[in-house]
Amino acid sequence: MVKLIVLAGGGGTRLFPVSRTSYPKQFLKLATERSLLIETLKRFEKKIKPENMIIVTNKEYKHHVLSELKAYGFKGVHVILEPTSRNTAPAIALAVQYCKEVLNAGESQCILVTPSDHIIKPGEAMVSATAEAIALSSKGYFTTFGVVPDKPETGYGYIKAYKENIKIKHGEIKCFSAFEVEKFVEKPTKEKAEEYFASGEYYWNSGMFAFTIGTFFKELEVYCPDIYHLIQQGYAPALKHFDQMPNISIDYALAERSHLVAVIPLQLKWSDVGSWDALYEILEKDNEGNALTGDCVTVDCRNSMLVASDRLVAAVGLDETIIVETNDAIVVAKKGESQKIKDLVGFLKNNQRKEVSEHTTTYRPWGSYTILTEGSGFKVKRIMVLPGERLSLQMHYHRSEHWVVIAGTAKVTIGEQEIMVHESESVFVPKSTKHCLENPGKIPLEIIEVQTGTYLEEDDIVRFDDIYGRIDN
Image (cartoon, rainbow, N blue to C red):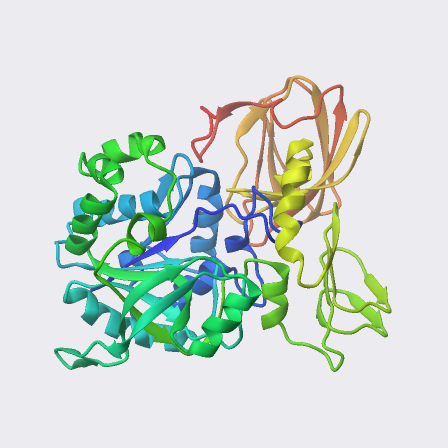
């Protein structure tokens, strides 16, 4: 049975302000009913059981991943937590070693690697291509998937294939659509993209791979010994010394250097959602070419995209324009220029703007909270606690809290007192008092919290007991 490695550690900034460092795009619902991470798992679930899926993510996103898995019933999925971000080559190497050492997979075990933040339609076409990828991999190929381009695109890397098909037979699988790879090409200029598209010999680089454990480590030893020697110390030592690995992508480390690379063409709708322009391409449009998400109204607008998260967004007379709104930021860009949003984010980061990393909604293992308003000496939050979950037993030195239940029932501990607080009821938590909030019910608990005090930041918290293991944080 093939093992699926899902890369979910990226903290992309190109979809700012919806995507932030604390909540990157793999957890967003973009043109999908579920998050991109869950859509990725659902794509393969008919062929690969959850216990054969391995998600590699940053330790900062642990509770996001676990909450998503729980919400959609993915039991048994393995989760590897990177202590620091080190690009795709170290992440894949760590996961392959995990398969070998922890899951007892042999040298001939086939591994399928996919990003967690791509949109693929129809997903069945991708899954059906994996059978051929597995067959090629069993013959020693380092297999990748190339998307047949439908236009000259400058935002993607390309793969050039040799013209002659690979012809192998593996069991009942005949592989007549794959090609050996001549070279990988970085994102091209407009003129080069048009040349590649016209030639019919180039494919978009999807970032998805298939290989056996034996082939992977053999190529890694030759082309990226820095990672190989650290990985060969074992999974636990490699995880401990993960920050010593080079920050390098799998393309640079292996794919562009190996002589064993084959590409399987994919004829489907694919996007890495690397920009707002890319999202515009896959969204449904109205008769004027406008893509509208959320509460949006347009008058005399054409070929534009409006994304509203919290408020009405109204536009008049726009052409080729992108507007994205959240409750703490609005971005306006000329369509075709949204790749430069990463430069905008860099500017904001250099100016220490918290909007780059923080949403007004923050997700925790027990649920989430949203900052509604704040000022000198006060802060108002809307807190949502999932059924059966509870916050840590904690204390604040500098603030008091007033809680008003607006939905569900709260089990509240204040000092030695334990009480039940129902809808439209409230409770007061004095400063320097141990307290705990729990949802004992079957529906989400929602409360309005009013904080008052001289210091209201999140680091004014002393935890005494925490079911999520955060006392040392």
